[in-house]
Length: 337
Image (cartoon, rainbow, N blue to C red):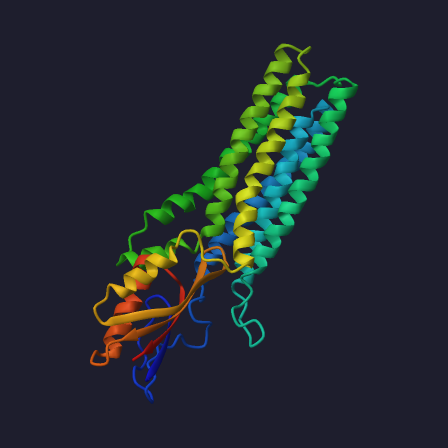
């Protein structure tokens, strides 16, 4: 049986096809499939850095305001901001680490640092939420303390303004990113994965805005009816559950990456069916699809082709199918007869 191996990534140029029975596309000196647009990465880092600074400022205001107003709801929102700062900082660090050169020991680079950092971030969220829930339950049992509804309302309103500014900052890149015109669909798909950190931060800020509105409503109620102090504790418990709920999907994604599961957005059986529908392909085996971090998917498989077909033509067809339909950035294919 004659075997031909090809390793490809995206729309890389063909630098030579035949070399001792082996067909290959070469990615140069960089790790195949993981070269980064440094200009776009720098722009994303600037946006995330501004978001971190704004978050730290607002978090400081909320901590002081929450203590002054004696409001656990504000402190819960501040705890959520701690998780935001951690998430943004992790995204910022992962963008920076993405520019590090791979080496023989770290052959895929340092992309998985993002996953490890996100896992630490989740543990921090759980710890802070647990402390605040415990304090809320203690206040319910022992009697609520007086909460300054007016100050609670002002701090939450300030938070909403900060979140709107951050949403505009991050959302501008998000919207521009999706309306960018490219020469073909596969190039557009490859481009959409590059700002995943900024898009994630944008969605994070939208969730924070909703929580700020909730705290504003709670503060307004206590301002209007000072005897309804329990509203602050109810907000604390509800927001703590919401914050913990937002970590479930993140934790699931982290575990799937660490377990090297097939990403949920890709159906391995469908990939195999698509390859088998090509008339030149007889069989596909040893199909593996996994991710080293969110948005960085890898695929490896063996493709058995008919003896009389042109192997180069089949390779081009397989490359086009995988990059155009599934946007998999790093592919290793072995052609067999």
